[in-house]
Amino acid sequence: KAGVTQTPRYLIKTRGQQVTLSCSPISGHRSVSWYQQTPGQGLQFLFEYFSETQRNKGNFPGRFSGRQFSNSRSEMNVSTLELGDSALYLCASSLRAGKSTDTQYFGPGTRLTVL
Amino acid sequence: AQSVTQLDSQVPVFEEAPVELRCNYSSSVSVYLFWYVQYPNQGLQLLLKYLSGSTLVESINGFEAEFNKSQTSFHLRKPSVHISDTAEYFCAVSRSGGGADGLTFGKGTHLIIQP
Image (cartoon, rainbow over all chains, first blue to last red):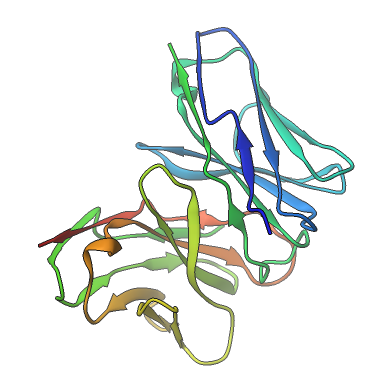
């Protein structure tokens, strides 16, 4: 079974631009979560999607948004990029939403650099 | 809200020596506990998890962790490390009472194996 895939793997943008990252979960998984990883703040939860609905959201500004499609694939969007948005963005999928016992499987991440 | 403290940002150890990576958590509700490993340029992989039952949990590659409720700790141990264990290790918690607001991670411990 293929793992979680994320595209693109690397991205360079300039301040003020917007960016869209994509995540394809493991086949059969219906929940997708996004995390931001930075050297200073570590790993932080962005949001979780299930059945095309955002279920939970972390403490991030409204510039960070996402969506999920009917095939469970998810995208996250960051508008008006700031230097501090430079990070590794990780996507994780799990079978169900709201089940802390379900293992989250992580993709390799998208490395975003904002210049 | 939950929080996780990994007391050591880096742990150097000689090959074939034992190692312990420390993790303490704080939460007002019951939690599940996880250890994830991240190899260079890769996403996170689940190493082991504690949901309930025996407080000692083991992984397939020789790591083990013990849940200590009174000390709110979930330290990771391995009796003999190998050069391939060089990686970043993250301790994480999630609420156990239903609902899911994502995993809360510690800042990570970089395990450095010296030959």
